[in-house]
Amino acid sequence: MYVDNPNAPARKPVTVPGLHAMKAAGRKIVMLTAYDTSFAMQLEQAGVDVALVGDSLGMVVQGHRSTLPVTLEHMVYHTAAVARGLSTSLLIADMPFMADRDVPHALEAAARLVGEGGAAAVKLEGAAPHILDAIGALVARAIPVCAHLGLTPQSVHKFGGFKIQGREQDAADRVLAQAQAVQAAGADLLVLEGVPTALGERVTRAVTIPVIGIGAGPHCDGQVLVIHDVLGITPGKRPKFSKDFLAGRDSIAAAIAAYADDVRSGAFPAPEHCFN
Image 1 (cartoon, rainbow, N blue to C red):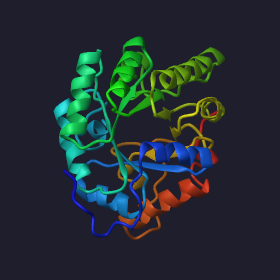
Image 2: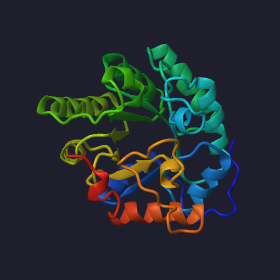
Image 3: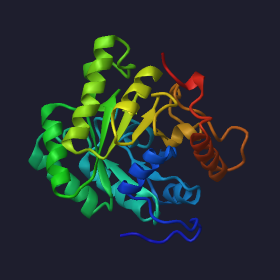
C-alpha cells in the first residue's frame, strides 16, 4: 500500500516505458537504493527516478559480509517499507539469493515482492539458462524484470571476491552476449556492475533497453549507488566507484539532490570512479 509523500515534487509517476523513452532521448536515469520509508521519501523529494530495494541491505543494514544471508521475507518487508514512502519514483526489488533457482520459485518470489511489497519490477542476477527462463516467465505474466550483469554480488564465492569483471576480451565478449540474452528473454532494464568503462559503453550501445551502471563508466544510460555510499556511512571501505556526496553539505536531502544532479549532468561518475 502506498502513502503520498507531502514533500514530493509534482511530477508524473516514473514507468518502465518512461525509462525506455529516457534512453531514447539521451536523458540520464537516476537510481538509488533505499531500505525504509524515511529514506524513500528523501529519494522522491530529490526527484530520483528509480528506488532500488537491493539485497545490499544484508551488508549495509544487517552487517553481513555478503548479500547471501538475505531472505525473501527480509526483501518483502523492506520493499513494503520503501513503497510507503513513494508515490512517483519507480520501485524495483531484488530477488534474494536462490529465490530465482527455478521458474516456480521465481514466480512465487516475484508475486510476493510485487503483491505484498508493492514493487513495480524485480531484479535478477546473471544470465544462466534458468535465469533466462525465469525472466521469460515473469514478463509473460506482466512483471517487468531488471537484469543484473558483470559483478553480480550473489556470485561472490564463484568470483573469489567482489572483483571487476570483463577485463579480458573473452570475458568482455561474454558479458556482452549475456546482455543481449537477457534483453532477448524480455528484460526491460539492465544493471551493469563492476566492469571497465569501455565495456560499459559497448553494452549500452549494443542493447535497446536502458543500462544502469554502478562502476561501469559514464556512458551508461543511468547510474545507481547504495545510499550508504552516497552518504559516506558505508560499513568498512567505500567502493572506488562511489562518492561521498554528503561531504561539504549540511543535509541528507542536499546530498541526494547533488547525486541526482551530477548523474543527470554527466559529472558523475568521474574518471576516478571508473575502471580500465
